[in-house]
Amino acid sequence: MLLCRFDADRLGLVEGDRVRDVTPALAVLPAHTYPLPPFDPLIANLDVVRRCIRDLLPGAPSLHLKDVSLLSPVASPGKIIAAPVNYLKHLDEARSDAQIHHRNQVGEIQRVGLFLKATSSLVGPAAGVALKHPDRRNDHEAEVVVVIGRRGRDIPAARAYEYIAGYCVGLDMTTRGPEERSLRKSIDTYSVLGPWMATPDEVPDPANLDFWLTVNGQPRQRANTRDLVLGIPELIELASSFYTLHPGDLLFTGTPEGVGPVEAGDVIDVEVAGVGRMTVAVRQAQAGDPA
Image (cartoon, rainbow, N blue to C red; front, side, top):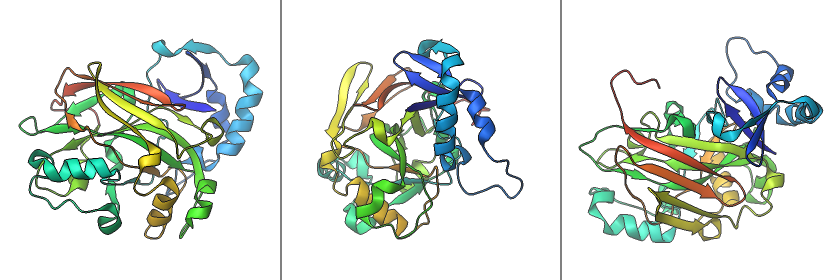
């Protein structure tokens, strides 16, 4: 299934260029009172929601994708985990370009590990990117994103795929500068997720996914997940050796070479073969912008 969130928190099933409104399936989710759980309720109950969706489909309204606003397919991740310099050519690129490394040491992922991004930075493609710090370089980074589906700790790589709920297209934006990367990558709208979540049955070989990014139609990045330094199973093993993973947690798996600056008015397209394509407009952040 290709599952999306759209408009005013509606739930949709994507079929070609149409989306079927299956929002009533959310009624099967359990009610939570304070304190709220550290996981996304939809992802935690995905199996029962999918069964309900199948029952609803015969009578579900059909809308054209171009007529809806796509939100982040995961509403409430407990954390956003990200893998730095997880493609060798990007490691070389980051080390050789002073505008990227900004005198920070760029270490191999095996040594520096993972980092966290603020969940408040998460938006869907319809929200676009609101650039902060216009005096600095703000770069695009295309990534394949894994959605964790089950609670787990110390997950061995051999069992990692059992803990995946789905895959999304990710745009990891970053402001260049001397600060820690988790700060520079946690600005509002700097984690774009979309256009929907593809469940594992839609992605037969996640270790062999082509993906690419263009800015204003000009190619910038192109890679395949087979070139990851640490593959998806190894990333899950590493992350779960430090954090308990919960349903809805997001794992940005890393970006390849070709990162570059964007400016207000640019349009970014990111596509992962077999998962989806999202178009993201870039604007200048304004005082009082909604998060």
